[in-house]
Image (cartoon, rainbow, N blue to C red; front, side):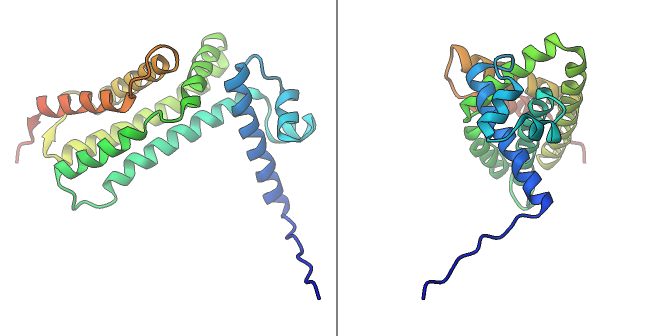
Length: 209
């Protein structure tokens, strides 16, 4: 006798979460392929297999999805960096080796470079979007600032500049290299960032005991 396999019915919250995720992934794909301006809400909904009504039940506009993609990328990056300090028993050389391994994965996603371009272009055109865009970047900068402060403390060194300024410098470098990589130069972004970091470490003074 053949046993019937019944598919578990999703709860309302699960169904909504699934719809949101499908819309986000569809929007990401279309933003990369056609640009932010070239992807309509209708296009996104159809690509995800939903109606425009389903889109508006989850997002007020396309900008909300673009910001969500940025937020996810920033949070994932901070989580990866934080994992380096999952234990305090690593030596300075081991910490740098862990960072070297992380750097190899930086901007491995070619689509992200294209999304970065779309984010910056739209921020230049929309003051309201630019304000929300800047708020997410400030959160990311503060998180990187705490990481840099912890890194130099772990190495018993004094940062050569205020950690927030260093974080802003790393963000600008990563962003610029990512955009360059998307258009004209495919060199790895991570290796340049680690070169910059090692230079800062070499110039830092030993922390007073």
